[in-house]
Length: 172
Image (cartoon, rainbow, N blue to C red; front, side, top):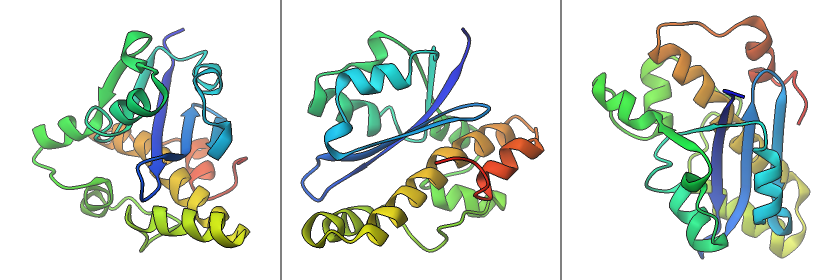
């Protein structure tokens, strides 16, 4: 196997998992949304992976998944948290702060983690599909930029195929 899965979650104001984004290179991207989020769908999306890559996932994403779904991903997969790699290189702050320091762009520039529950509430309360679409694009940026960040930290550049995905030419 030896596949790396890049994972990021979004939560509601109440700590419920609203979106899980998972990317396995070169072109396997999955969004699990709302009621689709359950142990089976997560494990199915990760079925070719043996390492889960996150940013602050060891303190947020992975424990939240365990608390909310009873699924301990660390029992099935190795975990690699890029935040600690960043710290070792003197890069501190959240994912967006580190992206800015390294010149990594994103389609949803200007949005931050505090916007995710607001967008989810707009979608749930009024059926605002544009809010859900923006939330999914925001999550996709987070997930895809984990790969870019990992490669930057290793001193590598992304290939054209990955850059194409980052620029919105990949599937959703």
